[in-house]
Every structure is written in C-alpha cells, then in structure tokens.
Image (cartoon, rainbow, N blue to C red; front, side):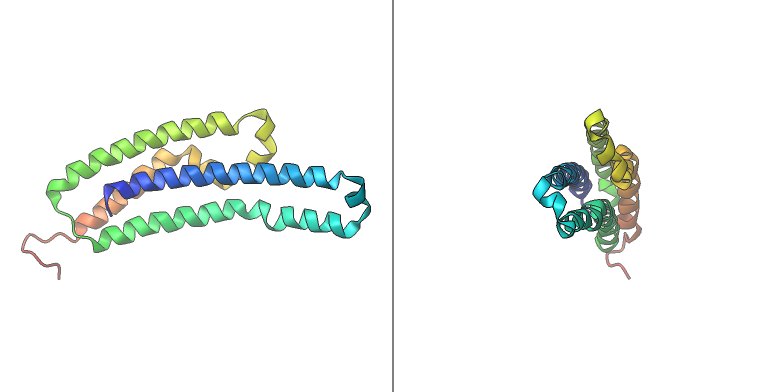
Length: 163
C-alpha cells in the first residue's frame, strides 16, 4: 500500500458514485418518458421490458458501488500486509492520510450539495448505499488508511527479512 492508493480510492469512489448517480437518473427519466409514448404504452411486452430493465439493471447499480468499495478497501489492506514498510515513513503516511481525509471531506460536501437537489430525490432514495458511503467518505478513508498502514508496518523486522 502506498499513500497514493488512499487518494486513488477517494477519487475512484467519488467518480463512480457521481457517475452511477447520473446513469441512474438518466435511465430512470428515459424509461419513464418511453413508457408514456402511446406506441410503446399499447404493447405490454415493451412496457414490461422497460420496467424489467429498470428493476434488474438500474436499481442494482448501488450494489455494484458497494462491491467496488469493498474490493478497493480489501485491496489496500491486503497489499499493505504484503509490502514491508519502514517506521521512518509512518509519519509521511499519516500526513498523506490527513490530506486524503481532507480531500474526501470536500468531495463529500460536493456530493451532499449535488445529490440533495429536489430533482434528484427519487434517485437518491434508490441509492442508499452509495449515499451512505460517499456522505461518510472521510470516516471510511481514515479507517481504511489506518488499517492499511498498520498492516504495512506490522511486517517490519529490524533485522532485515520478514519470517
């Protein structure tokens, strides 16, 4: 684990969260507009296909975000365990972790301003996991960073090799 992995997680999670949020909103709006077209509204199979797409694909984007979050967190912790770190650099890692936490606070506030607009109320209600993770991103980043840092320095042996 390197300190830039934590900053990478912040950027990736925010980017995916906003991207999935926009995809969900556009898909939901498009499906609702398409269902209102008379030619499509007459065909039950078309309406069922569109509603099935919304149910099976669009509403599961939230779980994809959760899987990416878990994978990134485990990746940082596991790679931190297999990489030896020297205690001299622990201060540097903590400083970069503080920078990552501060940047995640800014991005979390941007998320709150963006997602709480009245136009996005149904989209926000459909994505509770994404909203929870990004709204509390600084806490998660600090926890993941601390666990990764401790896993990295857990393997340190002053004699040289790790047995």
